[in-house]
Length: 502
Image (cartoon, rainbow, N blue to C red):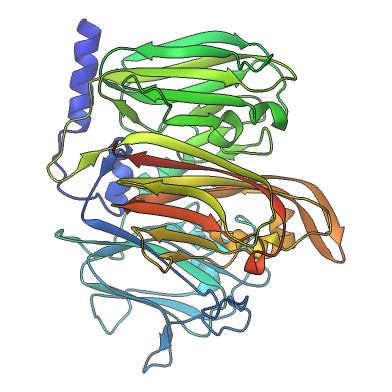
């Protein structure tokens, strides 16, 4: 009992600040135990150079590579009123360098940019405050030039490029009824750099007071029954802080796509999480080295998940085998704290969910849907796996991601192709150079083949959205498979999100 009380006190200390709105910028990363909180004052947006006519001129000719050209002759790629925060922006270019000159950032209507730097220097990752791994170039994120250093702005932010930039995308948030301080050159990213450099460890400032570990053996499915072993069962309020699984055998991709992790909250009859463990820990193509901020996997067999999962009355976690071929033995560890997180004025505490979908193959001329959900919640990230149906059926990667929020007819997020949305670039270079970084990655590709000078093959990718993508009525996340949905392929996906029970 004493240990339980101490654990609850430690948990309350973590939440001692009464945050009135969505923590933004660096504050979002300062306390990732707040992930379950869903706020009414935040909207997420995505800008890109996608072809507004529905074609595939997403940056090749620069037609949509700027919003406008200003009176200085600078190409404006972002121009928003605050308060807000840019969490990520990305470009692609040929080779190691970008050839469009300087990037400039003007804050709060100022005429002089607070950030002005040659693109090749900015994305080198060698110059603080924009240092690796917050900033990556094309030989790190395989064809992409990406910046994940938050840029908060109080009244407004304008970002320009000296020349036409080609392909680009920007993920950002706007806030209501909050006060933010705009970015300055004294911005200290050291804590975030340290956080990104320690992926594989719990990023949350929570001390677990209970850890349950065990070895479980799950037999192969037989006669329509899927054997299931319980990992944890509690009849009390609390929060799951981490789940770790280590297969005690050599699993292949088929096995990891047929062992399902299932999580039931508060005596649910249907689980909120019912997903294969491979994609859940970051790879749909079998074991890979995944070094994400919230989930991880290694080829040595150690898998981890650090999403906080609160429950009010009870929780039950199981591992179910839906494979008729073989069973498996696992060492598992689940850590939790006692007590439901404290309420915050204006915020709602959501339950953690994970949705798995697949279409093997998708052949219809419509988007492949990763998530279609009605209700209140916030999306944290996604994993997607694509396997060509035939070697010569390539260019599926030309499909654009589209995210529709709260019934809007026009997608709030509209991408320019699979490589771009996962922060890489140029299909052949992207497929032949897997990478894994804190917020995005392509940890594994396989069965690569040269098809008339262009590589085709299977890939698995992931991306996390800082600040979360909030929705109040509904959200639909989908992607084209090829330009105009014209390329059949095997798609599977998993989306991590928090939701308010209906």
